[in-house]
Image (tube, rainbow, N blue to C red; front, side):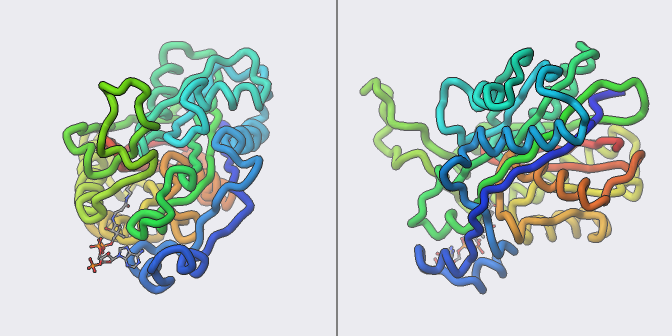
Length: 324
Ligand code: COA
């Protein structure tokens, strides 16, 4: 009926950075970070762990699980906002790393919602061109886009990648439906500049550099409401009761956002997969990373109904239902 996930994979940098490590960089404390965000550690990339390299590592594991080789991949969609280059795309570097010579490749930028948007593109593509195999990857090295002197943001983010291999199957498995949104009028609550313009007429005097800027409290409020709305609408539209959901994998932004969302929805907390304490907010990588972890832990059985939701800069947000 739609895009079925044949395999999942993830890849994390070696280096683990604790809250105590961050106490040496900014005026903060383990107690403050844990109580406000739920985050205890995050991974930070070192040499050989660029955005595309993490992505390729995750893709290799997903392909191995799927029993698919690089030659049979037709399309690579990479969701990221922290590639080491603007051009070529991160996806082209991933194609090179994998040796996926038959694939075409492009990036999607929907900030932290990137994976959900890319998954939807892959699903829609497969409904038209049914014989293809698609890699959808979320990958970030937000450590390269973080102001390490800003305690409001540097404690939140981490690096990592997650990937899935998609194939169309004519059965009840796969992506059931998605409900995606953007609101560009709210861009200035969560954003990141590019490198300064070479054209003096297009230079922005207030460009402090390519790192994340955020109005934390506003983001918090919108995130909870937006994800809740997207989920409720989707369930109503698909005539599915929340009780029918076997596992929910939300974007791992912050434990307080997740707790609020869970209580407003009324979903049992045992059904919600959370790993933000280990990896922080890995943006576009957070859902596929968590999905791979849940899958390898045996949290998903054939036929289960999976709910995923996300929220990010743009604002962008949404929810999807998948039959495993
Ligand atoms: N350590 C210690 N104190 C900190 C701090 C840190 N790392 N970061 C901020 N503070 C301080 C602030 O300076 C402020 O001090 P002041 O009262 O003296 O001015 C105080 O803590 C409260 O700041 P505030 O921003 O109101 O805190 P908060 O309770 O809203 O928590 C966030 C801040 C960022 C954790 C919270 O707003 C949040 O989770 N927002 C959503 C962020 C997010 O998930 N973004 C990505 C979405 S995809």
